[in-house]
Length: 221
Length: 221
DNA sequence: CATGTCTTGTGAAGAATTTCACAAGAAGAG
DNA sequence: CTCTTCTTGTGAAATTCTTCACAAGACATG
Image (cartoon, rainbow over the protein chains, first blue to last red):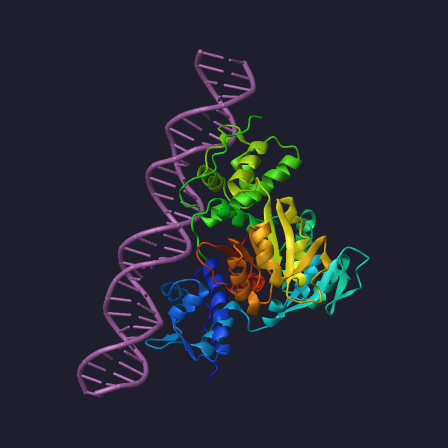
């Protein structure tokens, strides 16, 4: 296979929902590849991704035209294209801030390493646990974070501290030069607009389920 | 305070994004209440919720009219109204399926119990850990799930098993009569449309960050 | 009681996203 | 080479979601 010229950059703004779906398609494609499938149609991709074939084609069309009419998409090639689009061709350095139960669980989360996200360090304020190892990764003192970051240049910080410390920690992380934050604390954080934040709020998701249960208006998924 | 007649039921379909924001407003309101604030304007609510005042008013207007012109919203009353809307007036019984690191971390997650989500049991296949206690909750054998569910009538299952078992577990949980699933496994699950599923896919969120870093087009949050 | 300030609730406008529907390309069969 | 079958890529239409903008209500003050 010739190395593709990799044109994954539209200057148009792409909806977050589209990016999410691309991640999903990537998973479906990898599963298909594991089953030995050579090629996949937008219909098949939609089926497993929980959307429609038109949506699949539209999503991909923002970035180029990757299929063959009458045949569908070449699985291996589309995997490579979507990986490029999502920026998964390289290793991303991650700090996890907060060595509580969730922070510790995330250190070992296979999904991260599988995708090239490497956890360099876990930070915590509690002197009792600083210095310990969690699944091969050392727990470092929060006071070291800025200093370490200057050397290691991490790309992403995962914040897993209690809600009341989330904002302080976010500011620390931003002033350490980190430009992307994944926030697990159940509190919104405010950062300069040059920093990208994604929040994962588990209580909020559960509340969404409670709402659906109370107002059961047949939603599928 | 007179017990409100609780009219939190529009027959119109409400967007998921609206429900999410209601959860957020609830948090902001609780913080305001903790600070002793009596009343809050849609502007103040929007500020902390990361949205606009028009959006706040529109969101609330789907369910009724809770504010006072010129004054804003009564904090205590709006907390109670939104809680009703979201179905948080009662206790929700939760099973966690999969006693790995993430499952175990979720058992102790304060955000759940704070909102009336009570974890009745944690299920796992591994006989080595069945019978142990995790933060006061017993680990039970997966083979017991259907039987236990018939008695305990849980409302929600949180699936925290590896991706390759997610579908099987989802089917088990559905046939046990559970109608709402929160899926932490990094794999889509297919269930009948009478069952509501929310997926939290951490790798996918990280990929969204990677995309933002690669295509840095100043997004705030 | 009249006046001024503030903030809601909401139609209407605007923007964004999804779905439709079909022309056009690709491959195999005859 | 022609015909049939299949499936993409994409403008246009439809739908959904957000923002605008303003009339109307509520309170305080004099």
